[in-house]
Length: 447
Image (cartoon, rainbow, N blue to C red):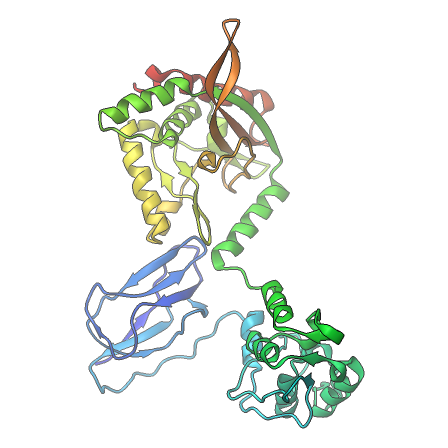
């Protein structure tokens, strides 16, 4: 009997996910444990393994579509086996999906076309989406869609006159065509083909060619500037950090830390085959300082404050498609080598897209280290649900005064961003100085 494969719920807050990529195709033989597809959640891209064996009979959800969790993604069974009934998948409408929903079912060459040098505008060989929005009162007529498609016209800009709901008709498109300046447009054949492929509106393309001609370079420039939908991770980052800056009153405290002793110790340990990153020492120092200043290990809604009994330090990891923050739990109870191994493992899983949702939850304080990027100083935005984040900059050889003499020391700036509702300015200052003292005392970190 064929088996329906659902998209699993990967976290308590996850209601919808997007299949980023299918790793198998219809007809493939599937074994238990094989990776079927990758899903993009609001935190990471995760791999989904098969719990069944058989032949992949049908892919129900295509890559790139956002759907509810637990809906059927595919069907596995025996070759030639009848497919089971599959419920219709309903997902929140997006602008992109709405545009696709309005796609024409057939293509037709228009009776006239913009002035394309050496040839008329070619008709599409296959149906393609055209511009429309969910707010449209009525769907444009098929003839209007086909006509608009051949002219690269944005149907949203046309006022419909058909029927009670103002449906856009072919006549409306023709009237718009004559009044908008489309007929005077010149475009090279190559540019026109690319504009069709990129679904660009002709009037939106700025011409730079001779006598106002639209060139291929013009179309490529317009395609480059065309708004693109953010990834799920990027949308969540934007939403959470916008909320943080709007609702959390940030204040900032910066100190310079002499990392010379740490750098010397790292060099000595490396000669012994022990390679600690600078971040490991910072994580350890922060965890110990949080024990002294519990207000930095808390969260508040402005009315109540909740001190967190466990010190779980989140470590920001930059990815190509955004930022994730895996959490080192009970950080204050772990030795340097334990922190080193755990951070390395979490960072590697993050880069491979294999972090589990549970590994990114429960943080009580975050460290954002951009030292490897040559940054001299920066401030970070507090992660919602926490009261502080530490921004760590590069370690730079710097002339400083020590014992009345100018010497070169390895200096690093750290900046605390704190929630002023939970943390006083003086306490924030004491916290960063506590971190500073610990980092400058190599013996303390080795205890």
